Image 1: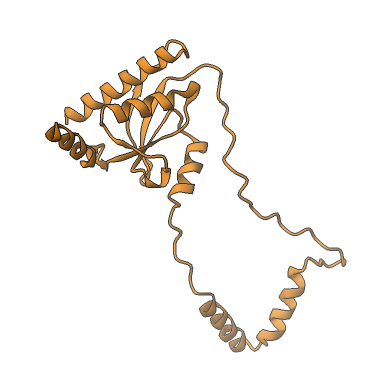
Image 2 (image 1 turned 45 degrees about the vertical axis):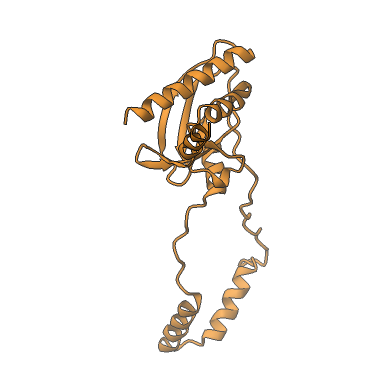
Length: 195
């Protein structure tokens, strides 16, 4: 009995190689008709991957949708690194040196630019300040009443689709959803074993 428990536990610790990525933990995104709960249950029961409740800890995500809303959620989990910005001080010093070489006073030049940036135009009217971009939440995605039926395993960092399967449940009854989840997980196990 101890050996069986040890083998099951060690299989959870081993990462599966799929699509060039090493996957050990998955987060199952909310799906149509609650299919995510059934898929998470089958993944756990069959010891394919460790299912985590925190998407930030996941190596990959199971989802039934691709597009802007998924990209938004992935960006929140693993933000794309921004390129390093050049130092602002060096730019200011270069501007001052260039202005002095041209015979201009950088302080007066800065004051005149300050007046322009306040929004005053040549007629004395003020211009509206540009709107700032805000984090308004995920983009709204149109979801039709019909299920698409395709499930995707997406790498959380590279955002590459590692595996997919079309498995549309016949109805949204619990037995049908459970049957579909079993089919998905069994097919995933077969594909992992075949590599």
